[in-house]
Image 1 (cartoon, helix red, strand yellow):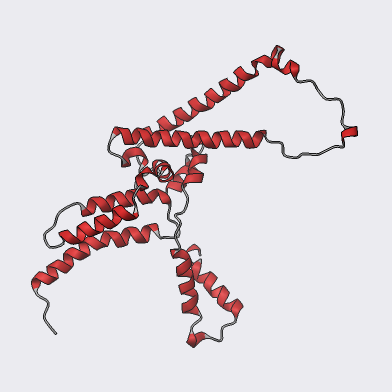
Image 2 (cartoon, rainbow, N blue to C red):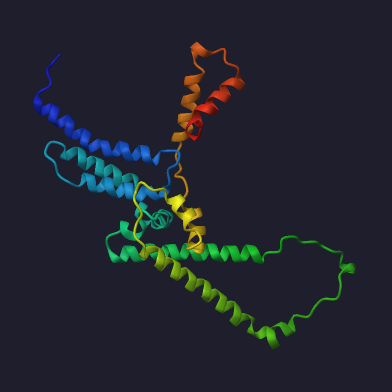
Length: 256
């Protein structure tokens, strides 16, 4: 067996330093309590980490950076990821350096809030029950011609003023939210929204929609691996119900 020279040990140490952030962020994004708001910050940090030139591993960093750009191409233009990251009180619009990108993220948040508000208004205006009566039993129809005149002529102005009030409320909440300081990275953004939901009643509805889990199969694969460890060749006499109970206890042990 050939001896490992000092230069090789140094090279392996440099490789570990490069790959360690990949493992750390992969585990964080693949966790059971992960949120898609971490995707963009993780990608940007990895790109920044691999932009520095180091002797001996420059080619490795170049390939890793190329792989990141290929796998996450267009992620910064994905409106869902941008809104989710902007609504995370740990990042907000500070993730983007230029004023143009920060302004774009705030506009996307405003559009998301407006779309949800309009959807809620349409849902509330929709009748909950619809009972059909035979044509002969229906009462006299009410003429709608007078709705366009008289007191009802001010309905359009009233509706427009209410819409403007909602829009101004969104602007105030967005301005207040982005002006507040960032919370520490170790804090839970969902818990922060739960605590401050009274201050941002419009933004919190959008946060509940966009701060969701990333589409990953890691928790499911881990659960199947747990089942394989519990019911093995040496423990093949477990009944199905006992195996199910053990898998459930193992998967929820951190809640106990």
